[in-house]
Length: 333
Image 1 (cartoon, one colour):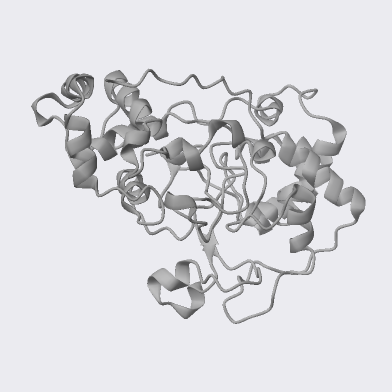
Image 2: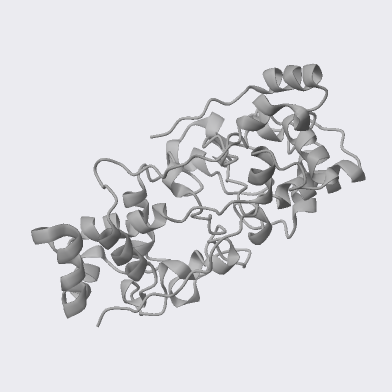
């Protein structure tokens, strides 16, 4: 697994002062440099056959009870690998409580779902299939369905040998494919690597704000722009997030920090899709969020003017990569 040292906000502020601006500080910019390889776990190593099989399963409606949903229904590559509606919709047009999180760069994830209830990507892959309000298909029934498809029997043999089609192997194949969903090189990456013309002056000012006064990098840290932690950022609502899962009062209303990669494709925003655009997202942080006992100590009022907001938005838009078009697989029969 790759680990990335991230400067604290205090260290960032100090380095900015000493260098005359974050955008002129190569050491600081290097904290956001893309990794060169994708990490795959020892318990589920990469293979071409497994990834290809996982892609088929990801786009196959046979993994839903009514054969009308796929993983891509809520994790659509056209919308930054999430969906374009405020709340996701599951089996029998059931409206869910949350907006689907993106699967971009999940290979670097520590936990999954907005509340972190899955500790591995393999566990996450099973969740929506079996959920009564999502794809609503018992995993044993999914195994039986796939066993009836001759080409799936062939593909599972290629990927897993004599183990064949099992619940765990379905999850391993989907997880392997999901780990290959990596955001492409973005203008920001070219700028970090030395191309000063890759982003405009407004975006450079936005980066200075992002790692400085606006304090965004305190949570949106590292190359994937997430600390992988859970924070109550003071959004109004009844969903207690991580706190409902753990029962810890300090984790009430806390949700995982999302990556900002390809953020320009991923509206609406937040765990419940409440904000239609990035301007509204930034505006939420200015007063410091709803005051309550569980509110993150990192949430403090921030003085941002209209130009600051525009610059921050320009910077975040430079994080959208030049991703290749995703071709649909030919499904086995």
